[in-house]
Image 1 (cartoon, rainbow, N blue to C red):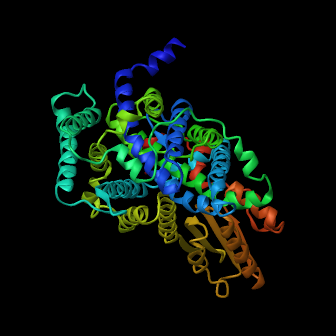
Image 2: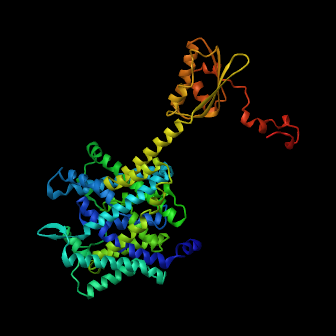
Image 3: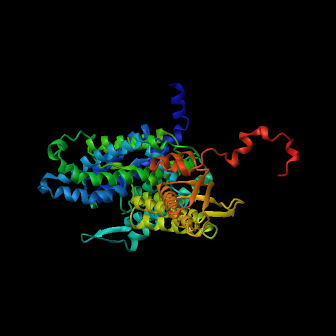
Length: 540
């Protein structure tokens, strides 16, 4: 136990300071996403607190920050709207359907962890990862541009004149402090110092600038002040537990669960690369699911890993679970005790921090390697970046993986080869090279000429691998074709699993497949007694 606490507190100073910085950055993000979803700001803040705390303690990636996210909020818009339409406006049914959906979402995510589906994140190719990072940086940048708008006559318009210049000046000052401070000393958290300095200038200089408080009020919120989250007993009375409800919320829960897990596991991979450590993807699935179940019951909008805040934490020196715990508890302290102070923080300071995150997130090396990698990888990289911006992370990653898989299949399909030779007894031998699977079936079939081949044909699979059911069907059809022409066909060096499947498909393969035969690739290892001369006497 002592060793555990020593490990968790080894980086305590950096974890605590970084956690406080992250908490400041969480406030406007959580509030903004709550507005996007059409719910009260406290619903977003409670989600950020509960999910952040639970995943920091039980998650599979120390140093990763979770909370309410925009990718999920976009999906929740129609869910809340449809839910509200099922009753009177005063009933606010959409909010309770949202809570029920978040609970189901958490159950799905926990099942993904139980069945160890998190490991499939390893199948995401590097071009997809780079495209995701670049697209993410663009999305974060574009999301911050909305902060340069103000409400005039009830409508949001771009800032002009002095208001715009002050905003730009404070943003640049924040970025300059974050850029310059590490060159002077690495002992101080640059993001936190920048926020404090810019806040002091705005407050003591009595500068009229948009703050966290004005941002909340402009969105229709009453403020940050709130109490501890409470158990939502009304879920059981307002959301009927029947098949109709399940039909309504299950598609939303499934989409939210998928987006949440993809974003969380991609963030986990990114933090792994930055810290040169290894997280546990299945444990993260369980933690994310458990956090969302608790959040749904206690009045939160659900969430997942937050890439921007995770990067702020890592770049601020936060490496352990303590950083996420401090961020969550500090956010709760803001809600309970320090709402007035936090509402005075200029939005410009937080925008400056996020712009520095954008600069640090974007994979600038991707420009340098564009002409050095295969064109297919360039297409994947650009496509994933564009789809992340246009749609969302889940669609972009899934599309990128599909494109990469199709390219891989196409390239491997071209590798199937057949070397042909005749034996002295008139038997024609086909030696197959390359993988036999759904993509290479057509090329495989084109290698054979059943009508013009001699009476005896032998197909040697010693340098081939039978990969799927399509390959088995192709072999089965080929045997049928030769036997229909009254010719004898034999199959050699099939793998054990392939032979088992063929025997199950049709017992007649026992007459076609040659069993008692040595594999020439392993002949030396299996029969060393046949080679009695010194190795130097053999011609290699």
